[in-house]
Image (cartoon, rainbow, N blue to C red; front, side):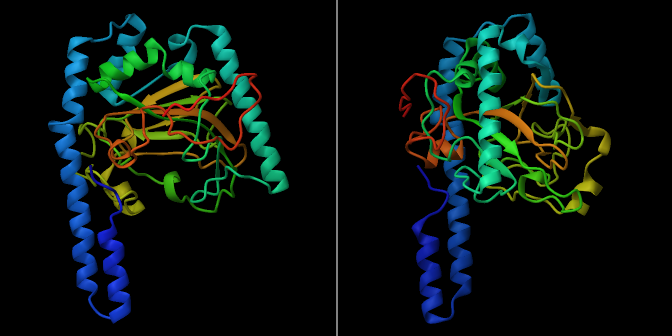
Length: 329
């Protein structure tokens, strides 16, 4: 097991600061840390965690129906698929509960933003309010968690990734509108998710999303090397944001898909490909999201509490469901 941040770099930086020389030592320490992350990921992908996950999948492969197979075909051809949420989660009561959960969260987020008492505004992304902190407890009665763990969604993720995958993350997001001329920052810019090459993310729109609501955007085929394969190629811990001019020169605009859609639309996407979103300018974007990954993901390798759902601690806010929360770790 490797860590994304090691004591070696921190200690080297302290020594260099104290003696006033030795910057090459810091660069060497950072390089050693970087190589360790890549090596550990490759070992777990080829020989350890993912090898076992693939073996289990081969012994117990999910059986997909016609709808799931159509979605899988889109994912394999384009690295994304878009469909009504109702096509995968057919229980109207669960869908209604997810919608209500999202509406309650949005009302709570707006109240926090108005009063300035927010506890779930992202520390690094002040334009984003999350329902949960980075380390959170999710109630087993959560309808969104139940949807993501359903045979239809989890089975689809397993077949796409060709292994028993982990449901590593679930959350609700509220994108705060910003000035149109403020410029994109952080994940509003084009980037690849560096945590894992074997990724499937779900984004469920809970409001209608147009060009001014910060739609999700994706470069079709860029996850599995059919598009922009050599442009800032994926590797564990890869640089997040290429310069805008380089991106515009390297990527054909015809390959960019912008997901404007109505509430109730589900987007499935391999976000190791180039994507961006959340640049809302007139209306907030509200969605539910989830991440399926492999046992070799950096989160799995560096966070010992990770279980394949949400890591365990207490959520900063949750509506009164009448059910006690349960630690999933």
